[in-house]
Image (cartoon, rainbow, N blue to C red; front, side, top):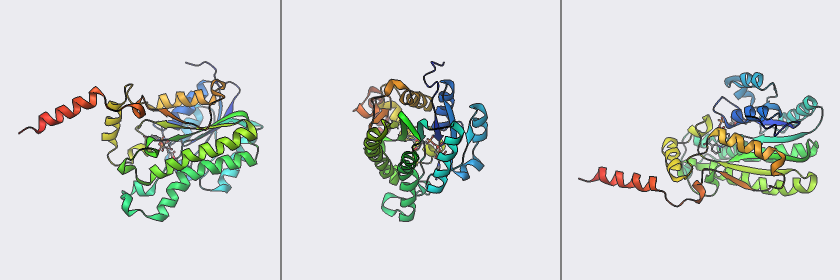
Amino acid sequence: MSNNLLKGKRGIISGALDENSIAWKTAIRVHEEGGKILLTNAPLAMRFGKINELAEQVNAKIIPADATSNKDLENLFDGAMEEFGGSMDFLLHSIGMSPNVRKGRAYGDLNYEWFHKSLDISAMSFHRMMQIAENKDAMNEWGSIVALSYIAAQRTYPDYSDMANAKALLESIARSYGYRFAKAKKVRVNTISQSPTVTTAGTGVTGFNAFIDYADKLSPLGNATAEDCANYIVAMFSDLTRMVTMQNLMNDGGFSSSGITEEIVDMIYKAQENNKP
Ligand SMILES: NC(=O)c1ccc[n+]([C@@H]2O[C@H](COP(=O)([O-])OP(=O)(O)OC[C@H]3O[C@@H](n4cnc5c(N)ncnc54)[C@H](O)[C@@H]3O)[C@@H](O)[C@H]2O)c1
């Protein structure tokens, strides 16, 4: 269903790897709502991913960029402005990767070179994008910038390891740059904290199936899907949310405000029954 919420708007969507990616679903929804898109992903992901299929579907150009490279990002923003014939209205940062999580390193045994990489790829890249966008005057007034976060920024999930620290930094950057961009250009900057979602990045975390199930049972509305997240991003890119900035917005079915639910109580009772001699 389309309400033309993004008619006449244009912008960059990063991080669409395959059809499960939150960015992939977002590109489809933004396109449906009338937005013009330019897609980007890491050069390596371009080779393994299916981004060309998506580009065809949403009629978008692709410019590869490693989000840790200023040179690549400069090239991305120059190319996007050329493609759009001027500055843009929205930007989605949907990028995350931790070599420590990928390689199963415990939090007490981190490889610090990899830790740097986790922070650079998953958080500093958000600052880089905004600094380059500001320097190139690439955002229109009342534009909207969104990055994707996870509740591990506030609460501890042992297997999320250094990604938790990266998400805390990402959310902090949204507040600091949100202030700056609001003053400079009336551009808003927010993070959306999404329920656990079955994607390549999500399933890289050990115990993912258990905590997706736990989150679902602890959320009165159940887990938010990637499609739900895409819809929220469309709302954040639209003119209906012009005064929302510097926020970490929960898209989690109520998880973050729930203490316990009947489903969790049932689960515990059942486990106790099963353990009776
Ligand atoms: N899946 C979840 O459970 C979940 C929950 C909350 C937040 N998030 C966040 O949502 C965002 C998108 O992840 P997803 O779940 O759609 O998974 P995904 O694996 O589909 O997307 C992650 C993307 O990051 C890209 N990327 C990695 N390194 C890069 C680099 N150096 N330069 C440019 N791009 C790079 C990958 O190519 C990929 O497209 C991430 O920030 C993730 O942390 C995911």
